[in-house]
Length: 336
Ligand SMILES: Cc1ncc(C[n+]2csc(CCOP(=O)(O)OP(=O)(O)O)c2C)c(N)n1
Ligand SMILES: [Mg+2]
Image 1 (tube, rainbow, N blue to C red):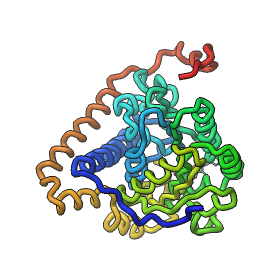
Image 2 (image 1 turned 90 degrees about the vertical axis):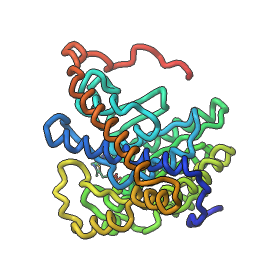
Image 3 (image 1 turned 30 degrees about the vertical axis):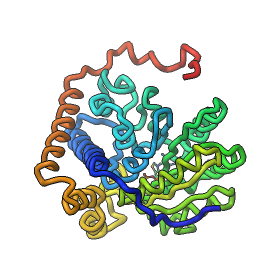
Image 4 (image 1 turned 135 degrees about the horizontal axis):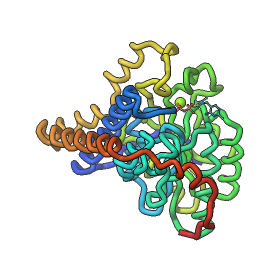
C-alpha cells in the first residue's frame, strides 16, 4: 500500500502556471469582495471565506476531467469558481438574489451546479463525506471512469461517519478521492487540541486506503499528488486519501473573534508561504511572464469580480411566492 509524502512535481507549461495564478487570484479577489459585501450588510447569514487555501482546489481541479464530480463543505466559494461556475451566479446567490445558483434561496452554503457536477455546499460537518462516496458509487455502477473529489476539513475528519464511509468505499472500491483540507483549525480549536494524530491521512491504513500528505501552499505539489490520486481511482483500484496541509488567513466565518491564534502566526504564513505569491515568483523568475502580463491578469480579475458584485446588486430579491417552490422534488431525476 502506498503511504508516502509527495516530493515529485509535475512539469507544467508557462500557460498552465499562468492559469493557476489566474484561478487562485480570482478566488482570492472574489472572496475579498464577498467579505466587503458582507460588511456592508449585502450578504446575510453565514459566510466562510477560503482565502489562503486557494492552491488546494486549483491544483486538484487541474487534474479533473469532464464528468468528474465534486462535493464540499460550507467553505465552498473557491470550489465553485475553480470548477468553472459563473462568478455572477455565485455572487448573486451569496447576496440572496433571484439570479443566484439556488434562486437566492440557498446562500453561501447551499449552491449546486448539475452542469459542472458540483454537488454543494453542505453546512453539516462531515455529512458531505458519505454523499461523496454515494456519487462515486453511482459512477462505478454506471461503469464510467469518472472520479469524485470529496472535500472536508481536519475537524470533520474526527466524525464517525467519515470512517463508516472509508469502510464502504474501500469495500466497494469506489472511485472517490477523500481530500482532507487540513487548515489546522476547526473553528477555534487547533488540530493539536482536538486530533490524536498529526497525520490524519494515515487513518486510511486501517481500511487499506492509500494516501499521502501534501503541501497545500504549493499548487504544483497539490497537482502532482492529485494526479496520483486520480490515476489510482480511475483505474478501478478504489479510494485514495489526500491530506492537504493548508492554512486559512481569515476567521472561521465572518463572525470569528480570532482569539485562538496570534496575528503573528497568520502574518508569518502570509509572508512566507502564500500560494499565489509563490506562483507569481515562479512566473517572473522563470521569465514566463512580465510584471505587465501579471498586471493584465490582475486587471481582468478585478473586472470579473466587480462585475459580479454589480450583477448581484442589480438582481432582484426572489418573489414572495418563491417561498413555497423547490421544497419537494416534483420530478424523479433521470440518469445524466
Ligand atoms: C455536525 C456539526 N457539528 C458542528 C457544527 C459547527 N461547525 C461548523 S464548522 C465547524 C468546524 C469544522 O472544521 P473543519 O472540519 O476543520 O473545517 P474548516 O472550517 O476548517 O474548513 C463546526 C464545529 C456543524 N456545522 N455541524
Ligand atoms: Mg479546519
